[in-house]
Length: 125
Image (cartoon, rainbow, N blue to C red; front, side, top):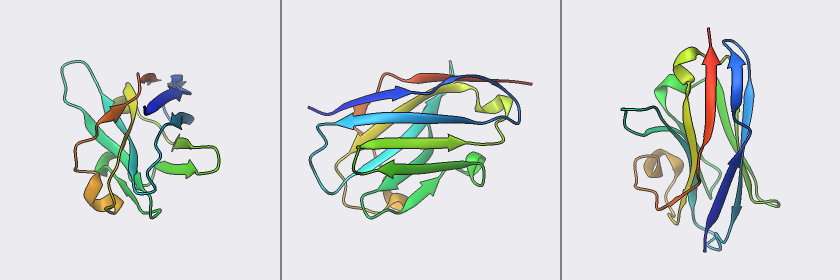
């Protein structure tokens, strides 16, 4: 079965950087979307960034220009490089995956069926 394990969260001051990693296993399809989502208590889950199997990427408006999603296909690891972090980026960050053949600009709005356990990111002002 698909397993997603996140790491790399932590506490950082505003303006700092963090890199999240998600080790994926069991995702045997060559057509997929993987992404990062975040959630704060009492709020809904927000799409942060998505990458599709064709290499296309899509980002939430609040992180464009600051965050970069990438994937090491040889190691099956998904990354999220987060720069110029803001206090409003504080959230639990989740890695997700789903078997879609669409580009990232489409699958960012699709439901994802596989989720990791989450990693906390806290940004202090």
